[in-house]
Image (cartoon, rainbow, N blue to C red):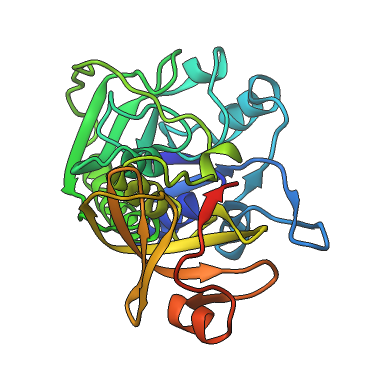
Length: 304
């Protein structure tokens, strides 16, 4: 079976490499155009392009799938298209050329869209997973080929859940391809959505509940980190180890600093936070920040 692979970021390149290492016949790769990255704004290849070149797989970055993409299909004659975080919706007539299947990091119909992992954590989901579905005309609404559910830990971060879902995604994709074609099942249930992350999403508000603050911090840990204002400076916060409901006089107040982290007040309780990052500095513990006279008990975090 000849496969054409569409993907762009690291999550996609890991799936592509897994296929290549397990001797699946990937005949061509399509990725988004290269973009400037870092402080120097140097144009760098996408992770998927970089990997395809390493393995000698023909790689294309068409501006229009319906023009250039169809020519690629005609030239390489793939039997199936596998899409992992490509970054654009596929549309007819390209979509109609061959069957395309998407690897999506949620239990569809929950969290259709660009940021399913972060949104699941932000909303405190206890379970999530991987869904492979046949792509249709709508956003992530096609029939399901295979789905694998996993449990989400109470304090699991985006980084930790990302790694788990990556491993589940690779193995689920392998199982799907080895059993292809398979019966498709319509998505069942009320859909929810996972829109792209905005700058506003990264602002943590300690006037919210301790549960909501806990979930907000872990959803963006280790990247890009949530933001708050401390003594007039924008800081980032990482790692929640504790939360509990309690009567609090001032949300955002640093109530205690210990080796494990800082205990900070919320609207209805407290959260324990492990690390803080000041502008232009590396991530440090709260005890290090206290010893460096960067903060003290009684300081207050405000919404950025």
